[in-house]
Image (cartoon, rainbow, N blue to C red; front, side, top):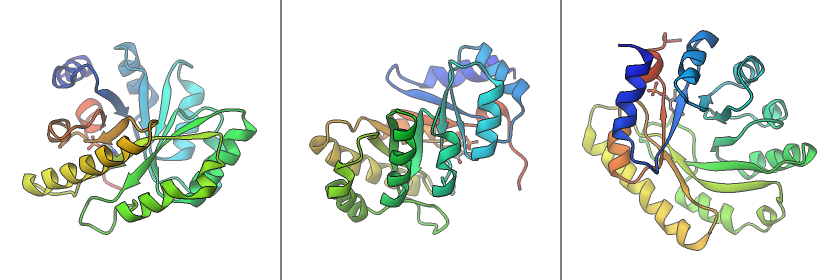
Length: 219
Ligand SMILES: *Cc1c(COP(=O)(O)O)cnc(C)c1O
């Protein structure tokens, strides 16, 4: 199936208000260009160096989303251009993003990653951590970041009931904090294998890699 057909098939499943992030990690520039030529303008990467390289080579109207776990000492490399950082899970990281954004005179949008999977390999905050974070006085001093919503990754399992309950849980947290904080509008959940379920449970941003670009080699 061509990339064009794959993208079209995915878009048939997306309602108007759902943003598609094309996850291009590990994939060569030529493939990204093919996807770009189909009109896609949002790309997701999970490694800083790879994202910087691709940013330099690709057209400048692309919005680059950092979807991987971001180390504090690497924020400086992407701060000048990154459009949305999905995996934020500490005040320390927000502090650094704010500092680097200030240097570039930008406001950087961030999503807080919530741990919803049962595996302990996945990063993210608990609901309690999130509530403490949102109430923190220091956060209010960060003028160069905006917390726009939440991101989560479901367990890696074929058990749809488990995935559903994890998505439902994340949506309930999203609804809860959205009532209190007006900036909160993005719910980033769903990947190639579970995005339809994620949409059913209220996702408005899906991160799709292998269903567009083909499977990746295991590391
Ligand atoms: C790799 C990755 C994706 C995309 O995964 P696919 O299964 O290829 O769609 C989505 N989100 C995150 C955080 C990822 O690391």
